[in-house]
Amino acid sequence: MYSAAGSTNHSPTAHWGIVGGGVLGMTIALRLAQRGCRVTLLEARPHPGGLADAWQLGDLVWDRHYHVTLMSDESARGLLRELSLDDQMVWVNTKTGFFTDRQLHSMSDTIEFLRFPPLRLIDKLRLGFTIYHASRVTDWRALEQIPVAEWLRKFSGRRTFEKIWLPLLRAKLGDCWQDTSAAFIWATIARMYAARRSGLKKEMFGYVPGGYATIMQRLVEKLTDAGVTIVCSAPVRRIEAGAAGTLTVHTGERARNFSHVVSTLPAAAAPILCEQLRDEEKRRFSGVRYHGIVCASVLLQNSLSPFYVTNITDEGFPFTAVIEMSSLVQREHLGGHALVYLPRYVRPDDPVFEQSDAALEGEFLEGLRRMHPRLRMSDVKAVRISRVRHVFALPTLDYSANLPPIVTSVPGFFAVSSAHIVNGTLNVNESVRLAEQFVQQHANVSPDQAASVPAATGVLQSVRQP
Ligand SMILES: Cc1cc2nc3c(=O)[nH]c(=O)nc-3n(C[C@H](O)[C@H](O)[C@H](O)COP(=O)(O)OP(=O)(O)OC[C@H]3O[C@@H](n4cnc5c(N)ncnc54)[C@H](O)[C@@H]3O)c2cc1C
Picture 1 (spheres, helix red, strand yellow):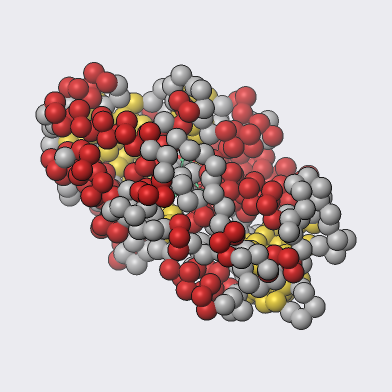
Picture 2: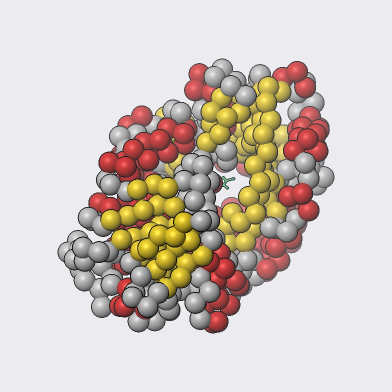
């Protein structure tokens, strides 16, 4: 059904429309253009980048959401190499903290782990075993059948579950942890062990000076050089298949025709954009549950702690972790400031999305002062709040079996999104890998062929196994 990868045979009228200018859409656009396809990228906002874009915070331009690259992120680093940025990366050994029983604890190595007061030695041994065991599991599909709480209680014990795992699950998933499968924790641990699998002695975290503003600028240049037409401020409202095999994409008042259209938007957008999808497909697309985020960026005069991540196991904070970017990024790259992110992961319909910036800023800074009483308000140079309702798909029970197809029943219309990362967490490395796999598998398919691909074969799988 597919012609061999690399032997692209494009009709002169083939024109691909990519909906969504995040990392996924941009990488798909680049790889298609590099194969000689004609490509137009349509992005709703005034600039591409999506979740990985940058913004102005006081006098600094830095990432809207905290981003770090792992040394083992092969696909992301491959792209950075193409952008001549990989050799500029700064690599750092970061520390991790826990805020537990109203105190900050360092948990960055084995000795600190063994000293960690809230757990007894037996609890620590069971916790260590759980992580080791998860890193050895290869049948992640079996874990999709088991609720995460059941699996963690079994291996770590009730006390460690309540004291450590539950606060961490709540931090990322809110109450939705109850509907999440053990594959979630497996994927998280698999990312921690990625360095070892890729032959590196230890994992390091890295960043490009200038952050994602630099990466996105280079990526846009690369796309333009490859011949991709980038259209910003073009929110796609409707995708319609016509009788002549063309797909018409409506953005406000304009309509554009394509031979192939790829939506990279959250799964639930597909049935809204394309009414011609079959009912069963619509049900699958709408059935993917998402989690969102409200995330404050706080620019400070001074650093708060040496920890890149501070996990919070105490209750009552308005944010679910503290990410101190300045423990990773040299201050000279941050205009001499310290930079802290305060994420709060929530359901897409959480009332927090309706709260004003001023109200959220007040709550978040008050919480930060409770954790760091030395912090003075005069130290706070700027605060901005980002809100995104659909960030990642919740890995619910039997997740991969219920996924919507990438190849839809509408000829030439594909809908691929981060929801199709079935055995990994949401990160740029997985997004780049998904994009590259998509192009490898589908770039040579004519619209008619695409429509005859059964749904199940439309699901890509990340090839990485722990
Ligand atoms: C808080 C946070 C922290 C993260 N930390 C890391 C990290 O440390 N390391 C890492 O590697 N990754 C990290 N990630 C993940 C990384 O950001 C994602 O993997 C990646 O950005 C996903 O890209 P995407 O293209 O799939 O989605 P998106 O970035 O969401 O792209 C979708 C695009 O579609 C556009 N769009 C929406 N509707 C329309 C429409 N109707 N018409 C046209 N365009 C539309 C949007 O504006 C957006 O640009 C983090 C993400 C978040 C939120």
